[in-house]
Amino acid sequence: MSAVNVFSTSVSSNNLSRQDLVQWINDSLCLNISKIEHLCTGAVYCQFMHMLFGHKMPIKRVKWKSKLEHEYIQNFKLLQESFKKTGCDKTIPVERLVKGKFQDNFEFIQWFKKFFDANYQGGEYDPLTSREGAYLAVCGGPPAHDSSVGSKHAGGGGARVTNVKARVPAASKTARSAHGANNTNDSAPEMLHLKSKMEELQFQEKELNSTIEALEKERDFYFGKLREVEVICQEVETNEAADDYAKETCGRITEILYATEDGFSAPVEDAQEEDAY
Image (cartoon, rainbow, N blue to C red):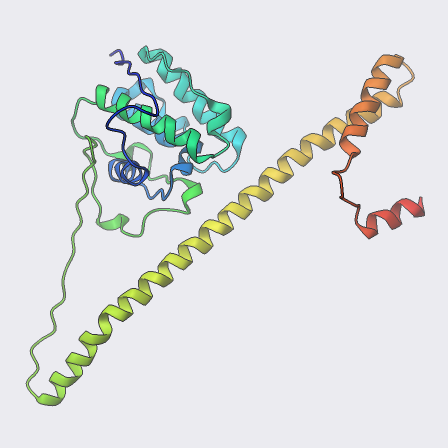
């Protein structure tokens, strides 16, 4: 099955708002993304392509737990490959999307929504089973209402089914019990509000902790790369067999590695260690 190509710009008519797009994604794929920036991992697009074109998107190779840019790039490579297999001529601006900036991801999802609508044929699809229950790590985990949600139709807005059981207190037989029931009913909205607020704060805390963890991993990843470059440069500079040009080049690279930002001073401990040598 070949894809129907579409054209879209930021001024195209009938563009959805960010809230509408987030709701469409969550309803269609049983996810809990809260902002457009979460699309920077590429995983969401991969699953939509699996929904549209089946085996032409190897869904099991999608990295749902990714929190680093180089892992996001792997997902977008899968997406670009599926575009080629289906005849979609869209070029993905990977370098901009993986940065997680709102505007770049918002423009791309606007185009992708039109692409999806032009190619969606209907039918049932179980997103949870297809991705083996995985959830986006950048969102902090599965939605709280996951156990009561069923979503097998994507369409224009997705389908969501929830089972809500309302509890109705038994009628009071005395004035005292009636008074107690009234007090309970009066405080119920306030308790629900506090509970909702607490859950929101807990989610924000979890999301911040996930962001910190991802930043620390990314920092360690790039520091390791820089350290490897430093070691190679040092080996070349001390190697008698290396020519002067190679030594000079490695020396310049080392200077760049050791350079500090304007106004930045090395920690006192580091300075003392240097004096000791």
